[in-house]
Image (tube, rainbow, N blue to C red; front, side):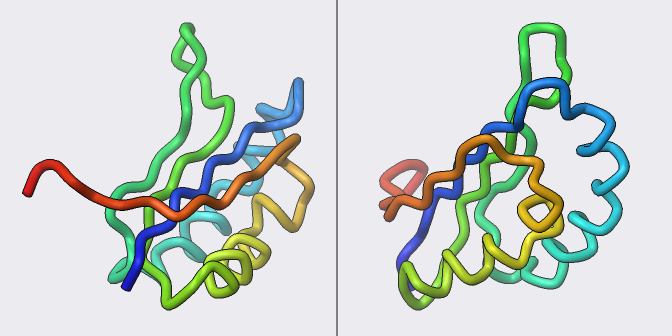
Length: 93
């Protein structure tokens, strides 16, 4: 299966919304654990989350979009922007 990078940037001043939604987000993501290459928050210089990056395998881009649309973070409007890009793993082999 091809990999897809899901890159999301939070809306300004959304730390509380992220924190409140995190348990539901993690439950949702863990339901796809077998598809995750890497996943985690993007961090500001002060260590606070400012977005998310997930690299996952899906059959096609439509499946990656459907997964992302089902994420509780997306459903509550946490993200200012979201991109889903095909990605190819080169290293480590």
